[in-house]
Length: 113
Ligand code: SF4
Ligand code: SF4
Image (cartoon, rainbow, N blue to C red; front, side, top):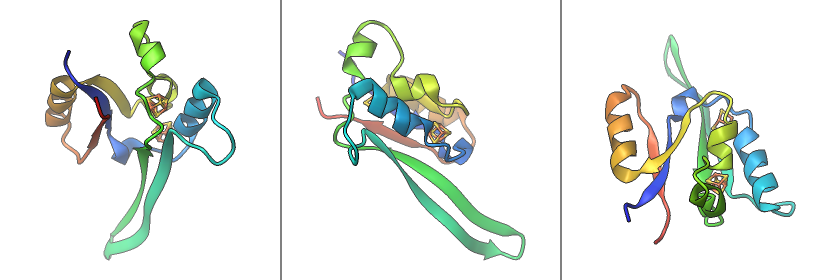
């Protein structure tokens, strides 16, 4: 079976934390535990007109790619709820194709088999 993962077009991420909350609700995670967690790289000035200001959602070791949901043909909870549609789920080949079509830096995460 093809290995699957998440691709995150993080330059579109608004930092809304919805993916964190959706994951915690889906997996009933206690306080302080996360299946995905927002990191940030901000703010610092690149040149006179450009500032670096971005959010980077990172799946943790608790992420199982929503195995129960995806086994039923549903999207992972974080992907379904992301308000800016910057998260994608699929095979590594599908995500690589999507990254290739996206003219921005993105990140791809897979989990251990
Ligand atoms: S794929 Fe599922 S388990 Fe992984 S971060 Fe998203 S909601 Fe959490
Ligand atoms: S739900 Fe989407 S836009 Fe909101 S923090 Fe997560 S990845 Fe970013």
